[in-house]
Image (cartoon, rainbow, N blue to C red; front, side, top):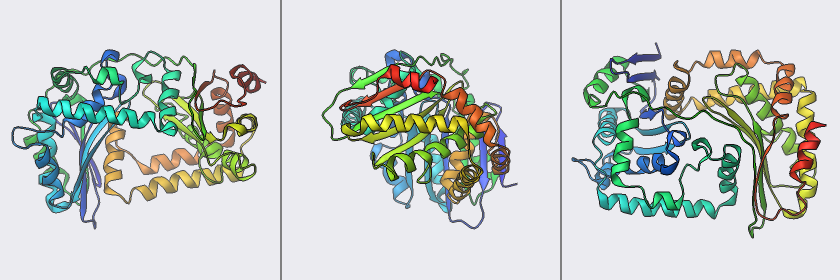
Length: 419
């Protein structure tokens, strides 16, 4: 079998996606813990831990951790999401053992020296400032916080400068002990490899992973608000969003197709009507986020303030349009785009490893391309309009950075959508 899954007695899961005829392997550790699992008083700790795990173990300092992978031509990286954190390497197949050993070392033996904590604290504070200077990125954090105010799910992934300045080394170490437990982890690998061999090596190298119970977290509460930040920028950046659906909702394929049709590419309704026909923006697109127990659907646009009065009515008209009808041509094109995107992405061993880990953590089962294709093929235009009517009748969330110019009022937006 190309895809095989083994669960160790500890609860640690190992999944491999075998790909013959390739020279590289991708492997990593994916943890079912992210920003939404934080105590709000420690907002940003998940991301700070991600940084700190690369900063030294008893056998390697930070430079050695970087060099040992790059010396063999590989690369090593990590990311922190709202519900997941990942650490991974991508290197030639003959260096698989090295990659796995380094991952095991940093996950189990990180010492987080005090001087490294202080140095990395400064790095993250610079990162927070960089985001603040990048309004087309910052507006998404503002939108998330406006949709889920005073909740970890709405808190910024990087944390705040005040909190990051106060997080101690002990707090970082305790976070790892509490959250990086066997039941929370998946080790995923893709490439020219043997599953049983991978399992044996993981069993030997990850024997020290604790088996504490998973931590609990608060359920999502969509409580939409407005976030307006006046700033001297050349463009106004706005996100208009709505409550969506969770990732286990059976209508999830329709959710993806709705986003594709409305604002998923150059042929989408928003791109054609707002940019191509009227020239009101350089960038406009829709997006969706599906969490464990809730979801968001959003539309981003960056435009000159003088175009805001014309922009919003056109966007609202297109929203109303997908609530009424999806053409057969749009449906077929969007299905083809999503299926092709997934299939082409699987030419990368790193993407395959990431896909399998995410599916195990999110759904408890391996990713199956044929099931995804079948789910897409089963969606009808009526399915999408029905979901659109449900989503776009939820109370909207609005976030904006820049000059509000002639932007339609929030109450008028709600009235137009309800009409």
